[in-house]
Image (cartoon, rainbow, N blue to C red; front, side):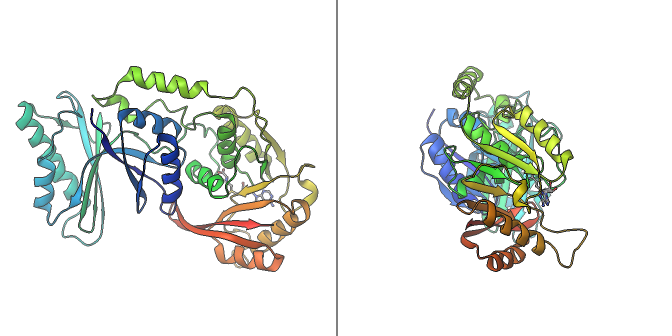
Amino acid sequence: MEKLRFFATTVIGLEDVASREVESLIGVKTEQDVGRIAFHGNLEDVYLLNLKASTINKVFIELYGSTFQSLNDIYRLAKSLDYTWILDAQQTFAIRSERVGVHNFTSMDVSRVVGQAVIDSFANATGKRLKVNLDEPDVEIYCLVRNSDFIMGVNTTGASLHKRGYRVYSHPAALKPTIASAMLRIGDWTPANSLIDPMCGGATIPIEAALEASGIPPNHLRKDFAFLRLKICNQETFEKIRAEALAQQKLESACKICAMEKFAKHVQGGIENAKKAGVHETISFKIGDATKPQDYPEAQFDFIVVNPPYGLRANPKEGVRKLYESFLKALKTKLPEATLVIITAASKRFKEAAENTGITIIKDRKIWHGELLANIFTCKI
Ligand SMILES: C[S@@+](CC[C@H](N)C(=O)[O-])C[C@H]1O[C@@H](n2cnc3c(N)ncnc32)[C@H](O)[C@@H]1O
């Protein structure tokens, strides 16, 4: 099979991190776009990325990518494509569309005309009529209309890869594992460095670090990859790649990773999540207050990677400024040599606290954390 063109989605603001990860995992050059990266590869790369990539959401086989002028145009372009290599006549499909920009049609119109175009193209080629199933399709085709761009792709992942499958305890303010993993990369953390998350909640950051340190593929618990239903998928090759990836697991990790948190309930939840992820032996858990130097473990840590609260219900006006200041003061006392990587949507409060405590911000980037615009700051304590 000749090289396929792919695109992978990621969090807006993390495109460069996702690019670097994909390039190192499958040895290709990538192009970056908003919330998306594109590259060429083969089917084995689909299996490998879905199993091993930690900073992307979904991988798509690109069917089409260019400009368009009208909804009729979209129908015509979609109908000109061949779908017989992707779908069998007895399989169902669904179109999922997103639209960005000003148009005289909705994303539902896009799904409707592209759905018709797929049925018409397939019927012309095979004489058979495909069935649509919007709830549980065998094959999902994604369309993005952004201004005058029209992109179509087949979803090889299914549900986003940030759903790793280890979150048996759902912290109410949990961080997406894709963002947690990106924070480690942004700080240039490697398993050779020790790490503490002193406000760990359900332990997403320590778990992502421990997966990396243990050589466990971050998506090893996922059994529901959408590529398994694509007619071009070769189950045997996938099983071989999966077995090879799992065999790289280290029996013991020397990496020192600590997860600390004020509330016992979250610590317990974090332990459950780490057990499910298969890394609880790599992480030491501790109840403690991140603003109190005496609560930290005795040892020094190279990195503090943390996702603190962004607001305080008890004190919405003062907000988190005091918490951030006390936290940074504790770090100055306890871990004066460490690098801090922190995500917060209360960016102004954090910058004030950093200034007041003499902590230098060396890197700063904006990302979309769900509906919130957040900053990831890298600091020298
Ligand atoms: C945004 S949540 C972290 C969520 C976590 N990253 C996850 O994915 O589950 C912030 C956590 O900080 C904890 N926290 C707040 N103040 C703290 C303090 N002074 N010391 C330790 N933990 C604290 C909260 O209890 C909460 O669990």
